Amino acid sequence: MHQPDFYPYALRHHRLFESTDVDETRELISRVMQPHSLIPSGKASGRSHMDFVKIGKLGIGTIAFGAAMRVNVEAVHGYYLMMFCVSGEAEVSVAGRTVRVNGEQGILRAPGESFSALLSPNCEQLVMRIDPTSFSSEERARHRRINPLVVLSSGGMRAWKEQLQLVAGSPEFLSSACANQNVGTHVEALLINLLNAGQFGSAAHLGDRLVMPGFVRQAEELMREHLATPLQLSDIAGAVGVSVRALCDGFQHFRDTSPMQCLRQFRLDRARQSILDCPGEVHVATIALNCGFGHLGRFAMSYKERFGESPSETARRR
Image 1 (spheres, rainbow, N blue to C red):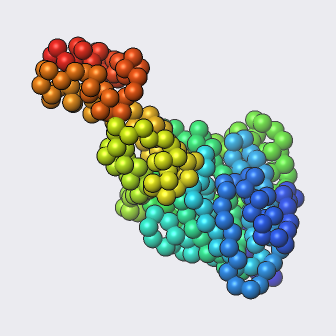
Image 2: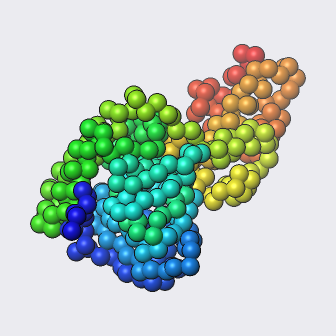
Image 3: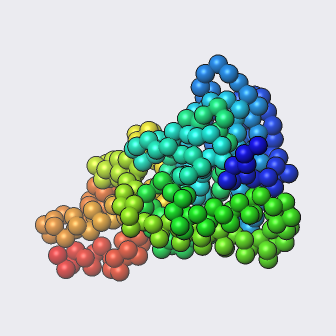
C-alpha cells in the first residue's frame, strides 16, 4: 500500500474525540480552535475525529469529517492558523479569492482573519495553532503582508514540512516533546524558525499582498463619520456585519490597538485640528463635545497624554 509523503502516525495516539454528530463535532473542535460553523455538503455523513497535542505554545493536530463538509470561520481568534491537507483536498476562500489546499500547498491565517473551506469527503487537515508571541512584532507585520497561500514544495517550506513529519510521525519524539519542557521549547522554536524562513524566503516571488479585511476599513470610516455619536463596540460591529470579537481581533492584528482606542484617537485628532482651525471665539469645551467627549476632564487628560500639551495651550498657539 502506498504511504503518503506526510503521515501523522504519532498523532493517532492523541485522539481528542470521535463523533458522528455534526453539532457535537463543532462544539468539541471549538474548545481547542476558534468557533466556526459546519455545514455538511451532500447527503452522506461520516465519523469525525480530531487528534491534538500541545508542544510548548504550539498546538498540532488533525481533523477529518468523514464526509464532504463546508467550514466557515468568521475570525481566527487569538492565534495564527496553519493548515494543509494530509489527504484529500479543500477549496478555500481567503482574502477575496479561492485557492486549492492539498498536500502541496496550505494556508496561513492570522488573528482576526476569516476563511471558508469546502473539504472533500476524504479530506483530513493538518492544523497548527501558533501563539502570536511565537513571532516577533516585525515577523507579525511581515506575515500580514505576504500571500496567505503557503507553497509547501518550496525549499524552505519543504524543510518545515519534513521537520513537522518527524515530530508528528515519531511516537517517541512526540512524547518527549510533549513531556519535556526543554525539548518542547526547542522543537517549537525550530518549527517557527523554519516557517519564518520558508515564508519570508519565498515572499519575494509571491508578490501578492494580503488586503486588510473590509470590515476594519468600514469600521474606521464609520468612526470618522460619527465622531460625535456615543458609539459602543456592539454598534460598530453590527454596522459592519461582524461579531464584537472578530472586530476586536481585526483591529488588534491590523492596527495594534482596540476599536475603542482607535475611536478615541480619531476624536482627539479631530479635536486638535478643530482647535487649530476654528476662530478664537469658539470654546474648547464646545469642540470637545462636538468630537464625542462628554467628560471634559478626561478629554483634557487624554489630549495632553497624546499631544504633550493641554487643549488650552494649543488654543493659545492658534
